[in-house]
Length: 295
Image 1 (cartoon, one colour):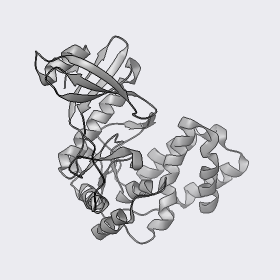
Image 2 (tube, helix red, strand yellow; image 1 turned 30 degrees about the vertical axis):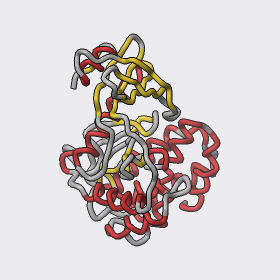
Image 3 (tube, one colour; image 1 turned 180 degrees about the vertical axis):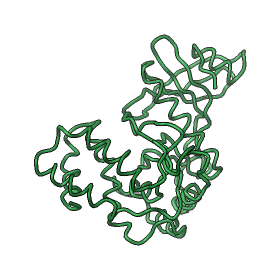
């Protein structure tokens, strides 16, 4: 996929040589990037994210994550349009999703569609292994290692928890370090190998899905990798949870197995550690609670 050297050329490349930007409106779009809706001379609109040029890898990872989910044909994602630079800025152009209402049945359909994503074949996404991804990517702005591994327990231990614990080392006192050591020794017994590997969204909280005009769910801002489906479901429960209808429908898939409630906090420890590393000590108490309860 080509990288354009100006926004003007990118718009011409995806919409035609006579099309240009006629308007630009800033919209809310998270803590990392600036987000805009671009009005085009052909009457259409597209979505743009921008950041300093050194953050281009974030946009490449998002492009690849959206493409992986789309390839499964199970759940909607915005179409990737273009990526490029202009001066010191990098940009990502995506299909603009016209948001609608979360109609009756929205969350049940969401649960069903997510289960279909988690059941999709993953063999082409992890060359040389079962868990991981085609390359490293990002969880928020934090680097996420996706080294191909044949064991889920090993992958989660080595490339999820250990990485984040090492980054957060300066926050921990002696008691924390003892609890970390105990937890790491217990992980092979606390975690289980899933029935099958699943392509995960990877950062599935309430801000990373939309209801389209037709009431269908759209996934945005992925941090994809192949792992245990339970890790995605755990993330949905971290910041308040989704509708009960979502969980009731998803559980019909059989992908959630006995003992999930005990594993949930371990999976969410990864996200809390990432938040601790990105945003500071406000997440330390939650991290310490999980460490002490599972040591």
